[in-house]
Length: 265
Picture 1: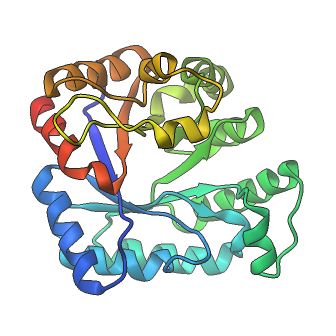
Picture 2 (picture 1 turned 135 degrees about the vertical axis):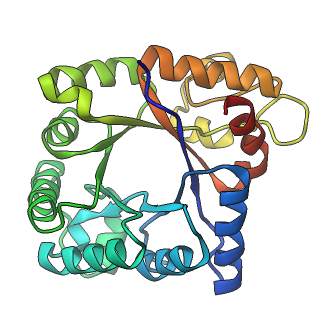
């Protein structure tokens, strides 16, 4: 049996507490299950923002999409994760990645290790959180073999990235073995029509797949087009063919994708 859908919404405008509270309430009203914040220097710190979300909502889960594990010492991060998980009534899901922006490491006055070392440190952090904050689900996001191997070993949720999602999920299935059935699969929706034309803006998707034609981009699992009925059918197909039941959209797609959520429930 396929898993029930879960829908996440990325939060971008964190310029005031009022806007964060309004975004949380809108997300609940539109049927989203999780509100997510990124972790980049130059943007507000994720934990205080999510604490504001928790206080403004009743059932909405909250998550990071994703923390750069290399920015944190495991014991200190575990303290923050435990506090937010407890204060939110168990609604916090911690999303982690290995970090990839050299300039952010330099701005933080941290060394920028090799990809292998960053993934090894990610696993170190995840192992510590699993032991010390066992109630908080862990999501690991990425698409490389080494990272997916770590995710197969530890994660409750895996955010699978890249254009060859079926191949990446097949790799994860092989790496996870019998544990694969316990893992929830997450996929990002990067393009949704917002103006009633049925035609999405492909700029974000093209940024990550610059060599593909428009036709190829429109065929990707993370790109929606057409009517609400068409989009709902494609989302069902993503779940049925890839097994990905947890889908995330960006803030500018909130209301347009909210109609798809309503059609699927």
